[in-house]
Length: 588
Image (cartoon, rainbow, N blue to C red; front, side, top):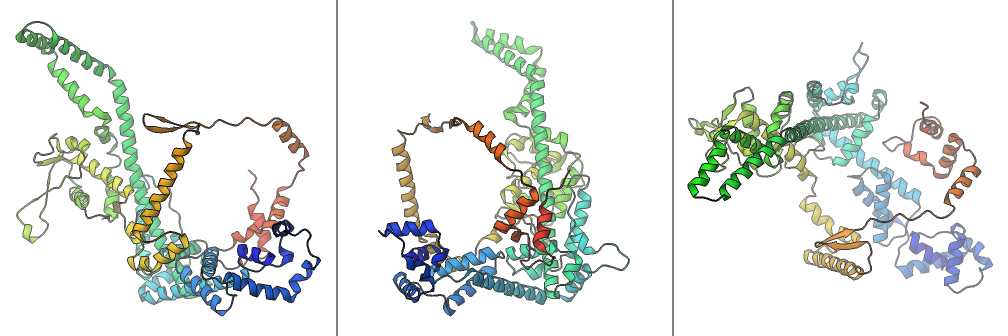
């Protein structure tokens, strides 16, 4: 009985000496036994145990671990290691597959050894593949980066690993120069086209943790792979930083414009009140007694003196009506214009949809960058030889209603637009680029955070191969109608449960058709809590931080997480002691 119940929970046969006494007593009580048999201590070494393990395997339909199970573990780890690098992930997937195929679990050391071997095998294959695809010039370029020129205190490898400074507007040009240099060194990008992103990220992380001496101690295939992966990820990170800076600068302009709008509204509150007073007088004059001519004459008397001033104030108020802050953007634009144009000139924006209207507007913007006139002709230059002699009208369908009057100078969206306001058109394009970068409708090829999300999607072939197994492991149907029916049933059950419990739920009420949750009341402190805390403090003995670290390391072996990122054993002498010293807090 002990073997059966522990095997059902653990997946392997535990020795009775390893089973905690409370579990043993619980199983014996459930079996209706009163006293523990004396033969239990000798059971682990008896032949009865071997017979019982065979009976339990037959009863549960489980196969003992052997060559077939080992083949399953190796194949599972090989498949998992193609996209994963952490040993716990590989071991967990192997355990899940063994359980699914009804195999007995082996010793943990066996799984750990197989996971390490398969991971090294897959990594070695990837490294050989990268080296095969590297051209001679690219190989020489990478080797030059990994060598220190004579007389130079630092190598190009240090420049590759250099972390970017804070991406402020004055440093943006220097930041772009570093990006251009990285792009020139990114000669191995095509060799990583078939390598999974997770593996590239792991290779780059390992390379970042190594100095030049450690890297040159490795085989050439691994050295070149790690260097190429780090350069590739550094380029992606630099593109992310440049794009993030562009977004923050445009956002900052909008925030400042919103603040300027609020200040403007506060400063001109008296003017708004005066316009309301004029409107009130006109309304009273309209409702006064007398003929139509008399009322019109009274209204004319009210407007005759200040008609032009009232009209100007109304137009000024209309420009910011509805909390429209866009007209204030131009106040904060001049100092950022060159930086925003530098971003468009140094990145290749790609649309993730079929809509290319905004990209055409960006091309139009760059073509007219050098012009400083207030108005621009809303037309393209000829795009090809067949179009010579004609102009293509600029598509302004991306311009929102709040921008329309500022960009075109016309309130009617149906009117033909011949000229556009250059400054507000630039601001409108920059704002739309910022929004579409954040939403994913525009992407920056080569970056990480702003890359094309479609490349991360599972291919149709891979989906067809894995959907059945995924559904089996997740316990959900993969057929569309069955999945919908199950989800609908779960939602109906949850709705019914919430509806049945509503009358007794004191924290939920319905107001105007909307559910409202009442804030939970804090439970009162138990009587004597403060006295208990004081006594605990008085009776707790002082423990030195070094003793605490040493004891917890002895109990938990937490320093195992401090090893090299490659997963290999540390080359340090006495690594556990070194890790303990490293974790000591620094005195300030």
